[in-house]
Amino acid sequence: MKALIFDTETTGKADFKADPIAPQQPKLVQLGALLIDLNTGRELGSADLIVFPSSWDIPQEVALIHGVTQQIAEEVGLDLDHVINVFLGMVNAADMIVCHNTAFDTIVMRRAVAMVQLALEGAVGDDPFGDKSIVCTMKAATPIVKKKGKRPLHNEDYKWPKLAECMKFFFDEELEGAHNAIIDCRATARVLMKLVEQGAIALPSPAPADAA
Image: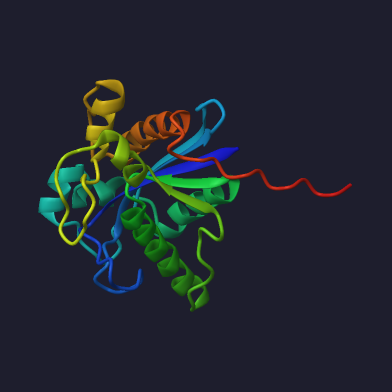
């Protein structure tokens, strides 16, 4: 049983009320992705990729958060279609998709995949995640971490914990290098395994074996 854990750094905030391909949605700047064995937590593969900013800019105020400047992206970035090919290969290998704030990261990647599909095929194709189970460690950890504070327009007793807050709660560790996609992925993997151990996240049932 394998999980794909991924995290994105982008050009800005997502519009959760709009379609993933709406023009105001943020562009993918950096993708971090880990494929892990859910039984052992062992890392099976990883990707840490920066996207070449073709005809778009990385705002300076955002670059100060994640560290990927326009210059860095132009020097080391890869074409988006290459990044998406790597990502889709990892999605196909996984039984479960995991993010710390899936609502944001899945919008970003659905948009990125759609942009490649439009460029290559002239139309948006199937959802890249198909019918795979998608799990949010942020929401699963909320009733365990019990971080005080209410969110606007929500009635729950606790706010959604940041990844750094989960690391502090579960491991009494500071999250060094937060907002670097691959660092956040490895922290999310540790939080995921702790949540599985505590029964807060159920693993998907294995697919039935093909009949002989």
